[in-house]
Length: 106
Length: 112
Figure 1: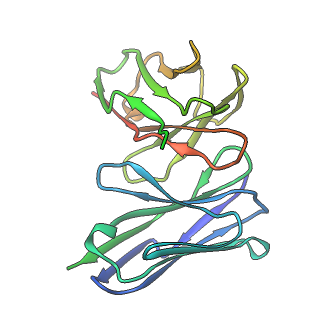
Figure 2: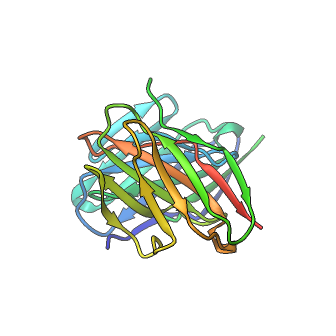
Figure 3: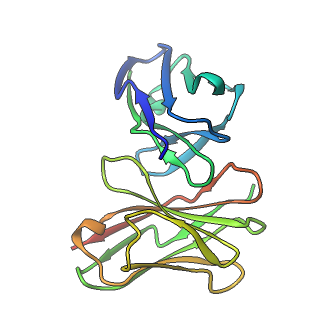
């Protein structure tokens, strides 16, 4: 099946810093979603982005499907951005990456 | 905006007991999914359901698991005889024709 790798696995930022999270996938896909898992365990849908670039406030995402990667940009990070960020992709069921655990320090 | 809902939010059960986790997908959605996340690990696919039957399932989804859409709104996951290793967060998801999946808030299952 499809392989999804995320990097870095862990990231510590000072509040206000910018960061880029990466998601590599092993095959052609027609779906890519980014999620933020909050401290209560809920998966918050950030982006549905099979290709191209989207922006939502301080977050933006870019997927280059031909090169099989996606990037999530977080600008001016806040402590509330802390949590685990997952990308997930495939044709029918979603295959999740291992996640990036982000901690933003005040 | 319509949401996927799940009940209960937290379920505690004794090993060997049966549990039923409930989901109400978004009303006009056609494809339904269950995923599982063991604490500290990534989210794993369990099963997909379409047109009143299982369309795909993972190796995790063995004979102890079953899914049902008993009426037009609910989608359930049953674990017949729970094991300690079934302790996890269980997520329900649904989609219509587009591939984007919408996730519920999850049910945290604790097996003692």
